[in-house]
Length: 281
Image (cartoon, rainbow, N blue to C red):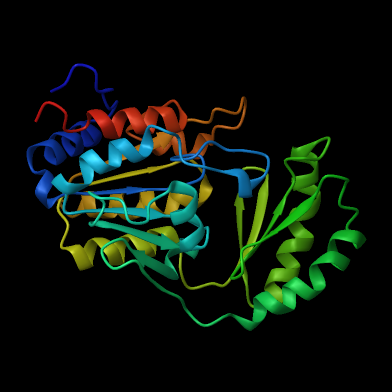
């Protein structure tokens, strides 16, 4: 094994890494986007993949059964922000956007979208008044993802206090319109139910008849994908769980890091892991 590769801290993780390196043609690498492939930034529209990510993926992807990016973002935004369209070597890449409700395939360049959820439109109309009544502090802002709405507190004077203040009013608003709440790092997302990263990953792995799998993420929404890999491991399928440690001080998601087999230093660490994964195989 390449001595430059970081070593998993668990037996299951070591077995998963060894299986992936032994049989890459049967393996799938699945990755979150924000905080995993792209550094966390104050404005999500400014997020871009770490510069080492695309070269690593173009070298790695042709040797794997498939690569998937599993993100809460709209699929086409993730494609644009990561520069994934029309890149030689990425023909086996799929982007599962909106927690798997949307799908973009690099081989065809086509995007499949579900019909809009009426609950999102209703929440969009009511959200400004709810934030006003709740006393949302200056700096609170809404990211409209089309099929979901995300309320960010990162720009407020006290992001943690603003997050705590708004969580229950936003949860009540979501429930009134049949939506679910997905909390994250200084963000509360309101989106349609019925899909999460775990369900999206499970369906993709079944479709690809995948063997070993690596999943890397950084936030609470990735716990469902971790659970999907853990379930497969319980059924005898090896897997490696990677936590992308935050580059923003104090924001690493402890619940994810504690479940991971391996913690790497943010998107730069993820890119280095991808680059070295099969370098000596």
